[in-house]
Length: 380
Image (cartoon, rainbow, N blue to C red; front, side):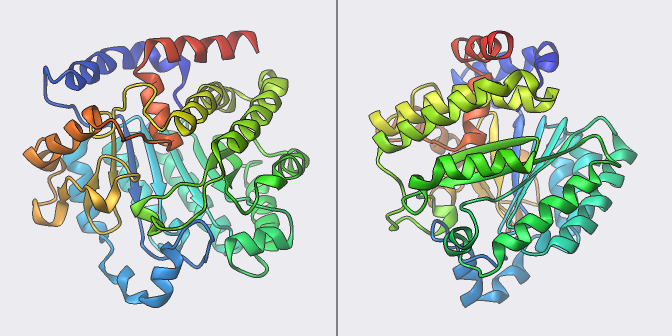
């Protein structure tokens, strides 16, 4: 997630986040910001009900934040390091390039990332090209990483994702994006698998297939119950011992070829190896293993203006709504309600957050974890 070369620049900010975690100062603006740009999604995944909610009430997306609202919000935040786009399906926003343009202008991120369900290959290619041109205008060194979802091979992918023909469109999307890489060397194309009860037996087969596709990176996360996904009552998470076995396999595969990877991917994989150890331990012990900086260094904006410490707590524990706060992110970030959520994260013994995006930030804030990252960079 974070370039090792930027650690020197980030060190003073990391010190401030640690002081904020110790409640000695107010939290600065987050270093890691996720923005769910839309509540619309065409997928009907077995692990997520966002698409099902949208299918039942498509008018819900009409209330998504508009460009003028987004601009006010971004102006109130200022610089972040990692700008993560989420959804719904981000490419359903016709103005996605303009949103990323506002991000480049006001947030000045060092990394921009988005997932996609790959259901509209031509649209994804067109908008990605527009996004790359916008990034070039502001800072051509900023990488744009795009991660199509890959939850099975052939019909199995379609079954898990809930849309017939999705796998064929996934292959077309990858082909189109890899062609774009010939024009934009700061475009990073990866794949991401959600390991759930529906596909954990297929993991080795999925990874071997991913290798043949020759993408920049392949990562996985465990299926989670999150209020963001409207799936809190769903039985989707594999047993801890199964996930530990899966993680061990992934870690071994990463170590085999981490040295061959280009720089950004190498950084990401070094963090990923530490994340795998952490999440495996979390699932076994049902507790947070290293301190969580959600609501301090990590923040999330929902499609309709709620501010969250992270999407794991999401709708259950919002910090506030930007539409009710003059679009002033700082006002919500420093509110009494936000401090109550942070106190819950700090002190509740039943709380733990296995989200990879959040874990990356927590790793960056933890000296022992960062030593492991550096070892992965140097010795694998």
